[in-house]
Image 1 (cartoon, helix red, strand yellow):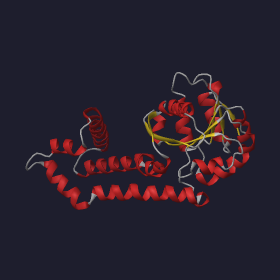
Image 2 (spheres, helix red, strand yellow):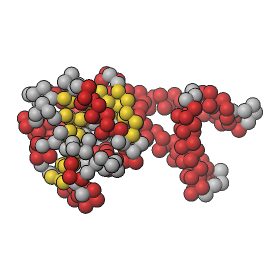
Image 3 (tube, rainbow, N blue to C red):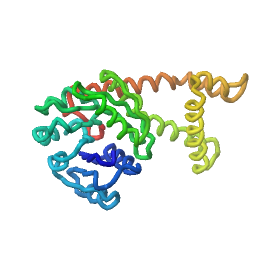
Image 4 (cartoon, helix red, strand yellow):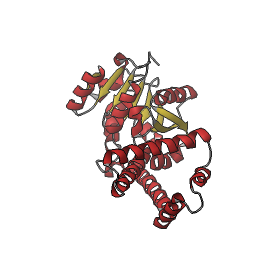
Length: 279
């Protein structure tokens, strides 16, 4: 990896998180990266902070890169592909994190048989804790997939799925941190309502979430089994569970994931209709 040249096109929230996450790894050398974006202020910031090369010219960024990370929003991806597509070679790899956009669509902008890999990380890449899924297009070899996995494992956990499942991944783990942030905010607010100070409520909420997640991961038990460990007869947890079930918490989460999945599918069909805040 230390000899591979990586171009990052687009350093918004996701692109910036991926770049910063990768730069935390021992194999990442600033001279092996080039970053392009239309925002000169962002480029200046990354140049100063990470010492990477920067440019506002996407073609220049892509020209000599081994891996081109496409981290732009779906509604401008076509424009970027039109800019760089003609100058790409079969030896290069396109790694796209644009929500909803299929590998076949990306390939249509490139005349050569180039490797295209679709990925869906999440914002936790910023701290090396992303949950990422990858799927390869028809020209992506096992070696290409291995390289993409190595890159993305530098910012978290990676699983490989068939491409038709990528929208579901987007709805679940791609959007997932938002669900968690909202839950922690709600728990913290609840702590304040019952008398705790905000700092204490935040600290307890965050650690409770971390501990519970780690317990699921390390025991490999079903969450329902772990839930039963907490809900003793006539206790506080079973009373709280009754309230949550009446409110339909699980149903709301299922609805949210399903809604985000459908939105990812819409972005793939009509990328130019994407809202500015969509990934």
